[in-house]
Image (cartoon, rainbow, N blue to C red):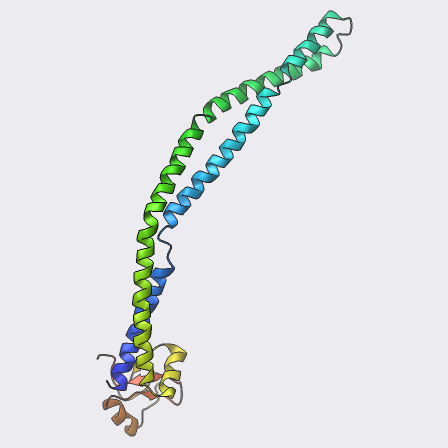
Length: 212
C-alpha cells in the first residue's frame, strides 16, 4: 500500500474506532436503572411517610386532651377551656387528615414493591445481552487497534506526527496546500506517486486526492 492508501485507511479506522468507542460508552441498561432508581426513591419516601403517620396516629394526644377538657368542665377553672378546645379541634383535623393520607398511601406500597421486583427482573435479564454487546464492541476495537498499529508502523515518523496533531488528511487542490501555499513540483510528483507530504508552513498532511 502507498502512503496515500495507508493514511486514508488510518483516517477511516480512526473514525470507525471513535464511533465504536462512543457506542461502548453508552449504558444500554440506563433506562432500566433510572426507572429502578425512581421507584426505589418513591417507595422509600412513601414508606417513611407511612411510618411517620402511623407513629403520629398511635401516639395521638386526643384522648388525653379530652380527659383534660372533661376535668376542666367539671371544675370551676374554665378559663383554659378555650385554648384546649381549639387545640382539640386542630388535633382532630390533623388526625383525620393523617388517617385519610395513610388510607391512600398504604395500598401503594405493595404496588411499588411489585414494580421494584418487576424492574429488577428486567434488569437482570438485560444484563447478559448488554455484556455481550460490550464484548463484541471491545473485540472489534481491539482488532482495529491491531490493524492501526500495523498501518502506523509502515509510515514515516514525521508523517505520523503530522497526522497525530490534527487526525486529518487533506488533499492538494490545484497544486496548493489548504493554507494556499504552492506545493513545489518535486513534492507534487511524490504526491502523484502515492506519497504524503507535510506542509512546511501549516503542518497539514497532504495527499494527492482523498478518493482511494
